[in-house]
Length: 214
Image 1 (tube, one colour):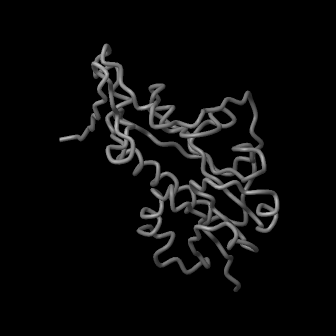
Image 2 (cartoon, one colour; image 1 turned 180 degrees about the horizontal axis):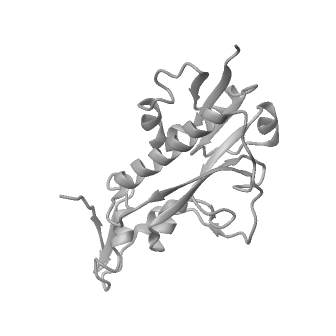
Image 3 (tube, helix red, strand yellow; image 1 turned 135 degrees about the horizontal axis):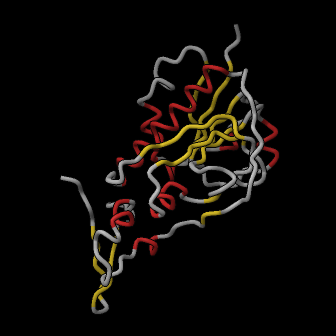
């Protein structure tokens, strides 16, 4: 029986998910699919399934049409919460449950049919690395479940009003020195201590503030 070809399209500049994938059963010991990882969409074509995870380059219609099925993971209750950094934005909103959707990639951002749903449950105390771990666990679970049923799956059209999250930048980690730590704890805990730590200004000088759990 011919194996289906599956590619994980990842971005070297946004590769937080790669180590989780390499250590998962999706990659190790999977003998039902021909699975590979690529960091260049120009090298990906004629695949049965492409999982596009954190890829930041624009993918045109020609790429979409060159593969049988192109899939994206997005962490929001679509069509609400399209766009960038949905996990971080929802944590700032105080969310304890974050929906995770496996959707078909289309030319319109985060607008494809929903194929599978899951959710991330948060205690409210996880820091950046723990949040990423839960996000990776949800991603791997969804993909694993999908591959078990492929090619027998259903599509669900998105319905309701759209909303969009903007891209977060380094300056979004600024703390207000006139507010308490408690008031800003969610902002603190989504900060990446190495890449984009929280910070504040006092008397014109910038201070970095990193957070660790004991």
